[in-house]
Amino acid sequence: MTAVPAEQPDPQVVVVAGGTGLVGSAVVRRLVADGARVVVPTRGADSHAPDGARVVRGVDWEHPETLLDVLTEPGWAPTGAVAALGGWWLGDQLVDVAPDVWRRILESHLTAHWLAVRAIAPVLVGPDPAYVLLNGAAATEPMPGSGPVNVTGAAQRMMVRVLREEPVGARVRFHEVSVLAAVGGDERNLDPGSEVDRADVAAAVVRTLADPASPAVVEVS
Ligand SMILES: NC(=O)c1ccc[n+]([C@@H]2O[C@H](COP(=O)([O-])OP(=O)(O)OC[C@H]3O[C@@H](n4cnc5c(N)ncnc54)[C@H](OP(=O)(O)O)[C@@H]3O)[C@@H](O)[C@H]2O)c1
Image 1 (cartoon, rainbow, N blue to C red):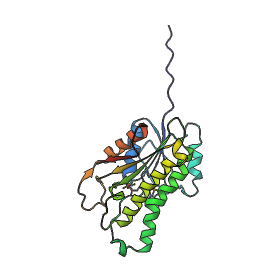
Image 2 (tube, rainbow, N blue to C red):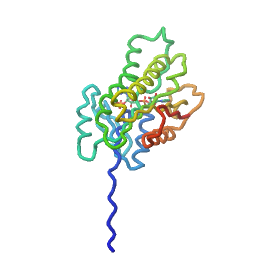
Image 3 (cartoon, protein in one colour):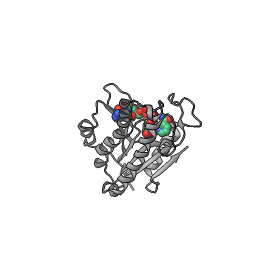
């Protein structure tokens, strides 16, 4: 009897927005190691992501055609997405934050998440499309000197809740992975009370993408 070769399943295609950053690059490394095709959109013209990822440079998130052109190529339709956008900030107390700093943090930590989900969620395909946003303890715990990040973190959490309730949420699974400790290797955390390895954060993100039973908020500490 001749053995019929088993049909290879299509590889998973995951877009990692912020895949050039501290947490996002760890997520990219883990997905590549697991055999996924990984697309990393970045605003920079010469930004880098871990080996094995397909980097799409010069992305304008308000007009993301260069990214969407890649995602419509045969074999590159995305089945999942991760948004690791924003990062950490420590500075003045809220009443002393300069307006341009406030606006810049709202842009990088909140508007960037909205623009990314607006670009990517509608084009996710497959039987169980999933979208994971990274967030942190600042979403719930007031942190003096990091007020703008508290405000954007709380708003980001509400954004996920709204997405889950709107029509897009009936088709796409939205989750937040909430990192409750400082991520090891981030020099912006001057005095971290506790630290988590970014490989562990990446593992939690990948588990959340894969598991339809994941809760809305997955905590990592
Ligand atoms: N770092 C920590 O200790 C820590 C702790 C808890 C939770 N987290 C969470 O992890 C996530 C990622 O944090 P991170 O520390 O890895 O971030 P990061 O390294 O500072 O930056 C992540 C990426 O955000 C993108 N970005 C920045 N400003 C943007 C803007 N205005 N518009 C669009 N994209 C912008 C950049 O991508 P391009 O320049 O390539 O476009 C950058 O590579 C955040 O959601 C954060 O809440 C981090």
